[in-house]
Image 1 (cartoon, helix red, strand yellow):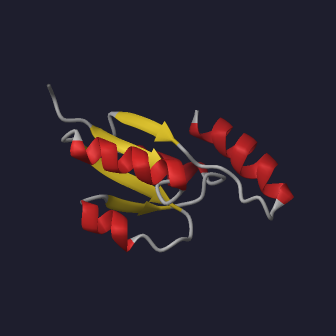
Image 2 (cartoon, one colour):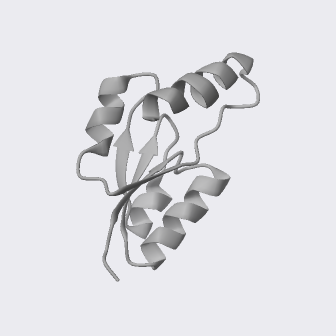
Length: 96
């Protein structure tokens, strides 16, 4: 069973934090991608924090350096309808 370097995009969200915790508990090294939220709890669990914007391809390239697996749990904010297209569409296309 080998250790992977896992990038969890949207690591502060309800789903993302559970994915990060489970990956850490399984013995993997986890980097959590954040945009704005504070995430000291992720650091306490052992996550490396990576900040960036899914609309910036250079941020994505930087975050992917040395990563074996990507799990994308990022979603738009319900109070920002424009984010549906940016985060949930453009951001996903950039990540792919």
